Length: 490
Image (cartoon, rainbow, N blue to C red; front, side, top):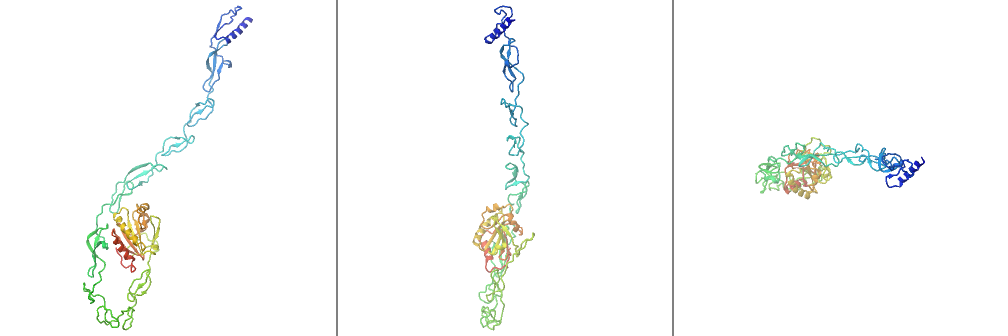
């Protein structure tokens, strides 16, 4: 027994220091030199303990051990035993797996996906966790109302920041007339121009433009009938009064029509007609003191002349002022909705704001101006455009006494569009001007209306006035110091 123990100790020592896998082992035969059979190690044993462990288990692999010989010798080949410890720690997100706090590798599964945020037609939803965009764009939300311009119509996406359009096409359908543009069957907007004009020579415009002959004491002035577009026809009509008779030989008989002219007027204290030289029996008042120059009898009261708002009537006999001033009457009430102005009507007071934001009240304007001209027009109207140059030229000359309100009758003539025309006179878009234009019977344009110093509708004219004299003659008639609201012209 003692010999075997010594042999084993020796074998263990030799195995630990030998570079070879073959060692001498005592077989117990009693040989003093260990005379047993030599032992060859076979590393097939799996001995799981710390002596044979190469490395501990990791997150992904089991613990690693060296194979051993039955004699206890440890080999160089290894094997794995047990279970890997598994990954741990870290937190998964919607874009990344969890990261192992031991080995740093990703493991596990990602969550179901991004969450939160709201998609629009221009931007995908933004994840409330990671801030990344995800999912699909939302469909465009095209508003039901049409957007229109002069060419066509379309719908737009109402999402803020989106410029996408849909259903864009040119206007179509509808039928234009001479006074109304076509209405698009798609969007309901007016478009295009007016239909070709057919002349109808049924307008009476008694101005020099259409005059054929001057008046005499036997015949009234004649004028051509005109079309609403301003063109003169060939048929004529009479207008106005007869001219004053001519009596060159002072016989109280007109040299042209042979009708009586004037009356005998007695001279100083002789009762002799100062006109024809014949004696008369009636008293005379040649010094215009209303008394007979011969007998002193009172012959007359103040008479004649016409009062204005600034001057009383002047007696036609003595030349003195008499009576009261003539005051204009502008109706300071709300105009009835159905009111349509006609010649001779007094105007209801109104306030209107032009395309530059300036407000005008009719009664205030007539405190400083002798007349107000209302010119109704539209940007698409050729005759309207043709009269603007001479109208402005006349206005710039007479603007201290004359005011012109250029009022569009077309709601498509916006403030911006009217302002872009650069007119010198106050100009009004179709919307702001409607409170005035709706009270006139406007069947064709341009239309010119004169409101005199007394607030009376004194002149109405349909058609373009394209010569400077058309306007200056009109202005001179109404700003004259001796003007009276007696003659109304249509």
